[in-house]
Length: 184
Image 1: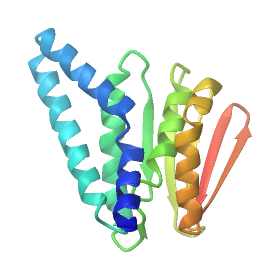
Image 2: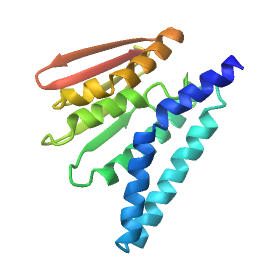
Image 3: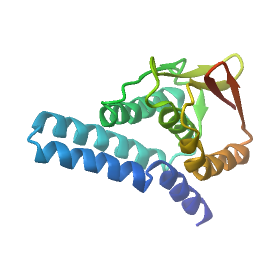
Image 4: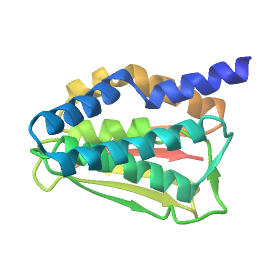
């Protein structure tokens, strides 16, 4: 029973009501404005993400390649949602099927990087798995510290999960860049 509660809590971390309602709001807007192709695309992408989230909820670990696909689907939805605030992203080093990580560990920190950097010029978020250091780095601009505070609870729960799995988390700032590092 405790494992099921932990799994549900993990899934809840990702599928927050805020994210769900924003995607559904975007879908509704596309339908009402007659943007059928965009609505079908949004619904397809959202369905993929939810299927992945449900699948991952029953797994203790997923491959880095699965994590990459999950993050790409998440960022694709967010990119469409924030079309008026463009951003680029790269996910590097996650192409391996032999390195595994617990599900829903990285996404809250990617969300923090994304929401904190919206509106900056040349906005790029880099998510890098460094196999030699067995770590994940998330590099971004952090313009909006209010977002950091709003997501603090979600990130605190994610950080507790990192500690539970004997991972560590560090944040550093250098010349307008915000670096989050998860050591596995």
